[in-house]
Amino acid sequence: MSKKHHSYKKKVALPPGSLVHVGKPGGADMHLSVVCFSPAQYEATDIKALSELNSLMSESAVTWLQIEGLQDTEILELLGQAYGIHPLTLEDILNTNHRPKTDFYETYIYSVLKLIQYNSTNKRLETTQVSLILFPQFVISIHEHRDGIFDPLRSRLSKATGKMRHEGADFLFYSMMDLIIDHYFICLEEMDDQIEYLESRVLQDPTAQLVSSLQQIKRELLSLRKTIWPLREQITVLLREEHSALGSDMSIYVRDLYDHTLAIMDTVEILRDMTLGLLDVYLSSMSNRMNEIMKVLTIIATIFIPLTFITGIYGMNFLHMPELGMKWAYPIVLGTCTTIAGLMLLFFRKRRWL
Image (cartoon, rainbow, N blue to C red):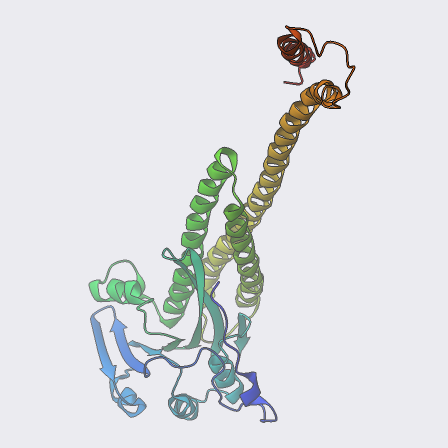
């Protein structure tokens, strides 16, 4: 996953609820858009100030305020004052390193989730934070960046496909969570393909570069697992607790989210076991390759031991050594060395050492 940027030093000694952005610095200015929909209408509008929101809201329609970007804390402060959002909720929205959770307040439900996307260029997972606030007829989504993550939902609303236009704000809230969780499946599919590719490489041509790739996948799966565990807890909270903003008929959809979360957890564990298994296979392959190399070198050294002994004797340069004056002494010695080497090779092959 992408490296996190921490800014906790700015929060030291500040009282709880202080609005300080903790996360990656920079980024574009905040972008605000409003979607109002009912079975008979759909209207999407970009706004520049929160003061424009009240004129767009209607009791007969569901309103969705989409905020992209977290650089302007003043807008969030005004949002909290206008709609009674607790300062601790606003503080959690600005802390992009926050653990996924769901909190129930008197007038709204607050959920913070991690959106995980697979970057096919560097083959890594990138994590951003999405905050959702659910009122009875009003939903606020706050995302770190302007990347159009909820564009599919806006398209479904504009085309009136499915049942979203006929449902309330709680169904939109569920749909947003479902979309975020669906991205987990997409990431896992990409990682599964990458693991299969590395598996073929490990079996055919194991190299040291594969270790770094496997270790990277292992770290990302561990980070993904850390994100999935609290996600299961926050969905359990939605199942267990009751709130005026969440209709009783939503329990079946929330259970569906819970089932998806369990499936993701199982898949993460399977991929993690596969990665660890590939690391073991790689180490075994390298160990076997080293053993084969050492076996060949040992056989070569063993063959040359008697040859070195013979040539060592005739390299002592004594005056009265036997056979030195013989005409065929040199070819006899070479033939003896060749015969010894051949007999040793036959012996090794018979013992299946070769």
